[in-house]
Amino acid sequence: MNHAFVDASWNEQPDGSGLGGWGLVLLRPGHLPERYQGQLDSPDNNAAELRAVLEAVRLAPAGELLAVYTDNQAVIATLARGRGPELLQDPAREVHEEAAARQVGLRVGYVPRTRRHLRAAHDLANDARRGTSPASLVSGAEVLIEQRAGQHEARVTLRRSNGQRTERVTAHVQDDPLSDMPPSARALLTAVTLAQPGETLHVRRASKVAQALWQRPERALRPAVQAELNRARAEADGAGVQVVFTA
Figure 1: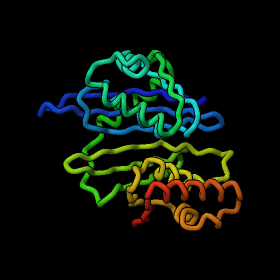
Figure 2: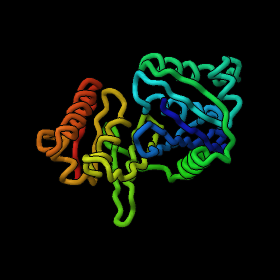
Figure 3: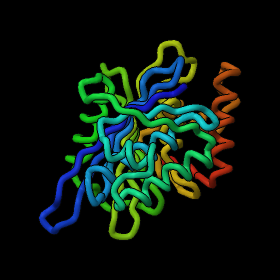
Figure 4: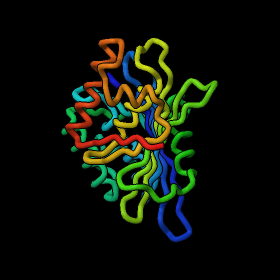
């Protein structure tokens, strides 16, 4: 079973609108913890946290069980018992529809914020909400891959614009010393998982190794790496996702 710890952060803006951030920590057996965060317009904190649940369902492996943990009783009541606030009914329905489409067996439960992974999700949500407004984007989504010397993770930031609204999603990809996949290629594959169907990703700062392996998976020396790259390429092609490398 896979596990996700989710939390949200929200503030009312001077114009009366709401700005929220969501964070989640995804745990898959045999993998390092995966951390994701995003900023969004949201009517309240509960709706922002439901967005975190939705992203957990999207990012978890299809066809497997997923236990989602939160300290938000309104979210639990809405998803598990269908008795939450009216404002949450539509986003809750979207969560269940996404879970059904991906054949993810969804379970929702309570844990206190003192739990380590939920505390990490809380920090991710706060950081996402406090992020500065991104600049206008090219058509599609802009992806920035940052790998800093001395750190054991890469940060992948995806920004997309939809009319007057701009959304930012960030993934923190930890190095896995047991994996044959180069870290830069692992960061690129993570960026692709954040794409929406039909979206073009304009990727900046992807390493030459990551670009070469994405364009020609047969260049990978290990058969397992070739298979993973080919699977990611096939899923992207099936969803109409295109990857364009920029300077």
